[in-house]
Amino acid sequence: MSLFDNLRKILGVAVSAHAADLYAVQELLGYHFRDTALLLLSLTHRSYSRFDQDHSPSNERLEFLGDSVLGLVIADQLFQDNPDLREGELTQTKAKLVNENALASVAGDIGLNKFLRLSPEEDKAGGRSRPSIISDAFESVIAAVYLDGGLEAARDVILRLIYSRRDELATDSAQRNFKGELLELTQSRGDGAPRYDVLAAEGPDHRKRFNIAVNVAGQRVGSGEGSSKKEAEQQAAAVALKKLSEDAP
Image (cartoon, rainbow, N blue to C red; front, side, top):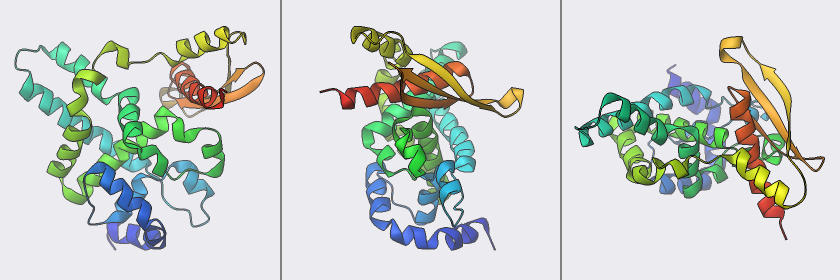
């Protein structure tokens, strides 16, 4: 049995149950899948896999592949379009187009995060607004398009949704400082400085993952995950900003 046959066997019932959502995501992407099981897998966060009694696989392996496909397409297009840019300038521009904030911004703008499969706990904790989860899912979706339709199909999605916004995404203003914004907000409200607490630090030293919560006025308002404390704090601050803005009268 091939990888895809096994995937269809595991996710077959779920694909039927989520048919309307999967159609909506395909409309957002401007790409229609031959095998929608791949799309469903790309939207499945590891928290859902642990929660699901059928033990659905998660999108982590797709994320690994999607990162490389995205990097190749963006690097190739930058190389073709900018014959006068030096290697260092190309590298910097590429980094601004494929980083977590840029991908989360694009995916959030098209509404991809609304269709992510998260555990109830992760969803309640603000996972649907967490840049790391959104950007990882976007990379997974890119991988799913690549596996379903080939490199040209993935290239079309990447160029339309990401590269077309290169001028906006490559500006320094697009690289937001969520911690700084949260600090300004809480101080303006008289709540003082946010407090960041490490909830967990897992994995070997060279691949450690941090889970950090942020508290404002004694209340937890968000949590984030990242490969460094700084990254996790940024994600937590982003979730907190969204929550506080939604709760504002």
